[in-house]
Amino acid sequence: MRKPRVLAREDGFSLVELMIVVGIIGVLVGIALVSYEASVNLSKKAACRANLKIIREQLLNYCADHEDYPGSLGELVPNYIENERGIRCPATGEIYHYDPASGEVWCPYHQDL
Image 1 (tube, rainbow, N blue to C red):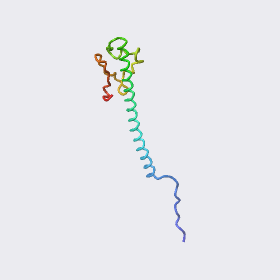
Image 2 (cartoon, rainbow, N blue to C red):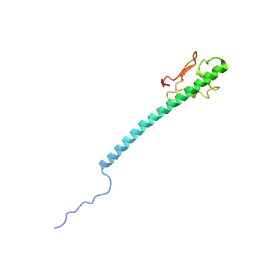
Image 3 (cartoon, one colour):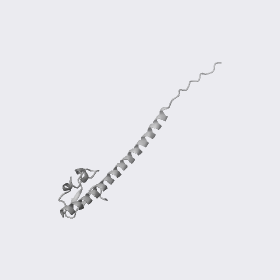
Image 4 (cartoon, rainbow, N blue to C red):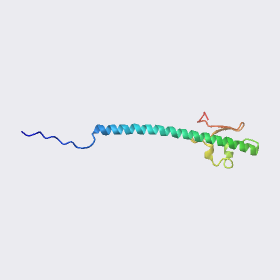
């Protein structure tokens, strides 16, 4: 009597194994994108805080030179602030809100600064 032939097993991955690996990679990419977005938002907030600090210091310098606050933040460019990007929020691109009577400047997007 002849022995039944055993089919030779081919080396490689099954479809289920490949799908599991693709799923795991997808989850890892999703986690990475969420953490990347959070770090970008934190860096924009830090840049906004730094811009506001510089603007406040330069407002005091302007006030010392002219004995009054400027009518708008645009008057600080280019003598006190290098360019117009310095008076805009990095997150939204809007010019910071400014009260010429009191010299207060704030960001409408980042309320807690």
